[in-house]
Length: 481
RNA sequence: CGGGGCGUGGCGCAGUCCGGUAGCGCGUCCGCUUUGGGAGCGGAAGGUCCCGGGUUCAAAUCCCGGCGCCCCGACCA
Image (tube, rainbow, N blue to C red):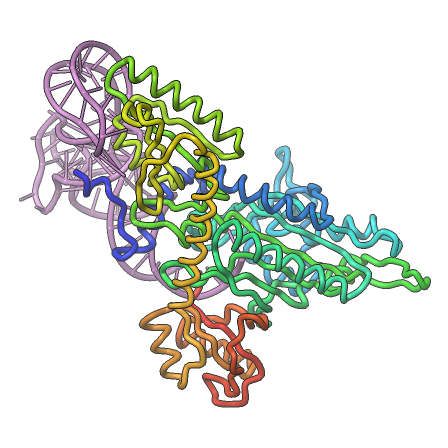
């Protein structure tokens, strides 16, 4: 009985477990359209929490939201050579509208640089118009060959920031500012530690000068690119003729950036924290931080516990805690299992015994149950949430660090670690793209990023792990999603 | 596109090898009893067996041809 209701375990089949968690928590479902998913209310609620936190951060740093069209004239994509090369193979193209063949096919945006720069060319004339700091929340379509719920779907939701600046230095500062915001969001809200740094040329965004990313490690020890921030240099400005008059009277192309995170973050959240009972969601992103389950036998107790539960909802909500009471007519045990699968951080069990004691049973999603007094409950819950938020980040960091190898002594140690353990490997790299490709072919591992200073090893590697030639940089390898 | 698996009430499956008029579990609805870790009993509703063709007295089952989805690779936020 219990077995048939249990999820596939992580140890048995990580990818089946991942799908089970999503289905059981009702985060998403497959749709009638291949590769496209339906984000169900429980999943969308997490995305909304992510959106509101990120949106606040963007606005606090001077960005504004806008909205650009879903359709892009096909010729626009072709204006930037690398961009079209990177995205043309995975675009969906509209050839007919209103029953007639279109004069020029319209591409369903895979990303919006091109149409946005077409507009920036109109809007930007003078140094006084800069910087332009715009973000949009949108859906995009990329015709991926193989899809996975949240991690890679044909259509996905994201935000894409597009900024234009007067100088190269300002553009670089913006790129790094956003990278920092992403990192802050991932660590402080998602409780997901990341390493940051520039990508190698082969992993760079199509059309960018430089791409920085946030890289996280999932519980199966595979890496996931969680967010990217691109310094586009003047590439798109030149392709779309976005010029401005400088303070000195000259004519120059703007320096621009773009950056984005997507609903993939929901997948990252799941694979970072969840367990064999289902979703584990950090309190700061949980739809319901507290779920109250009343327990009763008689009609009289039912009245009393429901009334107490409703009062408790009011009290906790007034204290800024997202709280709901589960008043369905089900056995309490059934509700416990359900809310655990859905990832509610805390459950308050409220029965006649608790009412008599003026206390309530607080059950933590991470384990442990204890009676706590009703007086001061909100303050207690706030403490518990802060503790859980910290515990999740610490645990994720510990898992990542345990799955990290620095400075392997030999090529064989490098290979063995990736084969046997997985995880991140920090090692020296000669910088040769051909070597990077060879390592990928041999080990399936790619360079996730060239780690920023704070992540680098205390002693910089001096030789390339693959060739033995002098290392030009330290790189982080992993098998990735 | 290569490899694997699967298409049967809302969901999960059995039945397919060896053709004989569709079954189980969960869920749903009604009633009674239950409710501090996945409730019990009784009753009820609900199916173009993915699609098209063929063989046959007879096809979920055999044959041919399609379509779709999932998983594993190559490509990618």
